[in-house]
Length: 280
Length: 278
Image 1: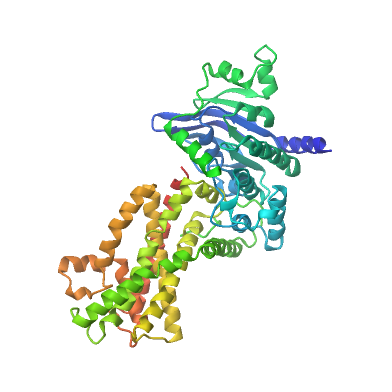
Image 2: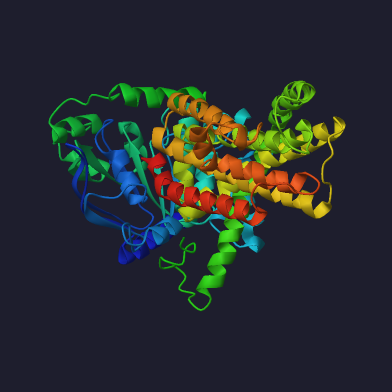
């Protein structure tokens, strides 16, 4: 039943074109962070942008979520152009940033309440949507506690709930499990799959964890220095290496042509650790 | 400024009543941002009480001492009467000028990006927060009124004028809070922000008519004082709080300056705020 539903969502999504980038490029000074990137995402698909820190994943997501203007090329999300129709794009997407975006000073309920109002969910439905989002994310019993008291996994699930109340066509998640312990990480993975199954949402996530891409993604795009060096289902990419049991790490080395240096530079490391410290 | 959400195509295609629904929607979004701020304050009201200390010191220590020595020429007014609106304006300034630290904190977390990815027009995000900042300013108005009355200062308690004071406090808070957010969007780190904040408060405060009349200043400082929005905030409060209303300018002029400067700051910050997500 669920499988059929997923297939149906995907067919509908492909027909409508949920997300498409064409030669999308962003230059910072002399650095080309994203270099002529072209890919498509289908309905109810979980698509992973995979690569080490600094590969251009976050820059890509920022352009697709209208936070950053492309230098050249273009992109449509839910049928709207990210440059010319930013408000329409914003209405159609949800976004879970890499950094913590739930507010610790108020309750879980209040974190949802403010976005329910900013997204102009009609008053008659507002309460039901908030309660529903809390229930789906398993937070109903802590809704009225300050987020300060939440665990890292609960915070991430609250952030997903915030991004879902307005039923977006596409959910963007930037490094959704950075800083989480394995148990919390598994829970987030389960919730991501649940979201896709319940609402037919297409999910674009970035990650530098090969295991995450392997477990969650229908297809991955491997980014290396801003360029898309490989694109396909994890199984197909592994098969292309010619030996059974190849890991996505090996796929990455094969396509990027060098060892993966995980951890990025000083700034990335600082950010990642800060997120981890706050999630503790 | 453009009306919220009327310039870009909507998903729903309900075109028949775009303008009124955009205005109603915008008001709802502003209400959401203000309501959110009030909920934050309600979880930690200790800040509001701590804020009472500074105006209390100024009125009880500085005000009382300077009253006794009659060093400052305030015409027919007692010095405490002259000082009370000035101290209210000063409290509003000191609180609002550091409001930008909240946007820097929200940038260091990922909260700013989440607001910017929502379909809320930038001008509403900024204007809403500027209004939200006035909640703290209003608490100061209550404190200063109570302190001044306890000290026996003769204040105008006509209900309409008191409402006018609250309105002017909201306006002044929004003005300095949006200036603060502009600085935050430019410097973007707490250290630099605090440095600039400290650097700005004293000149704004001393080069104004908050604690002495402009007429006793040297000419060069008078020029600065007349270009200082705090002067017009003090002026407006003095017209409304002191019986017989004794501002140097007519009230409408003070209000026009305050509204004009506040709207200009909000418009500038609406352009700068998206930088916080980069």
